[in-house]
Image (cartoon, rainbow, N blue to C red; front, side):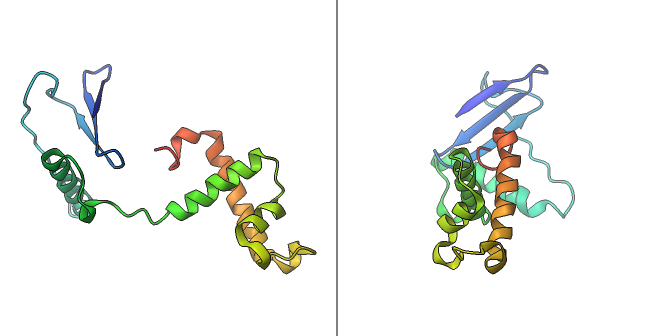
Length: 146
């Protein structure tokens, strides 16, 4: 658990079970001086599902100290992010796009005339390179370290 107080005296709490994190922003009141009345407002029906899920996660974390498996979010984009990280590592090591493609997709990438014969893999690696370069420009702002 950690807390930061900003210039407006709003508190920003991070509660974690070591893997998952829940963030609380207290715009009025404090948890530093003792108990606080928690008022959770949900406006509109469009966002209701995620907001109720976040509240359930907070209650489970606060009462049990960890999130049960049923409440842990599933990140479907994680495999893509892993490929982006691997691509960033390959770029830093000076690998060419064809080498990256061969490392990721193995023998499916043609060793000769790969630009034509393996164009789907070439396009995919080009997109990964662009995404990795974009994220490397500001690495703490993307999904890799959020």
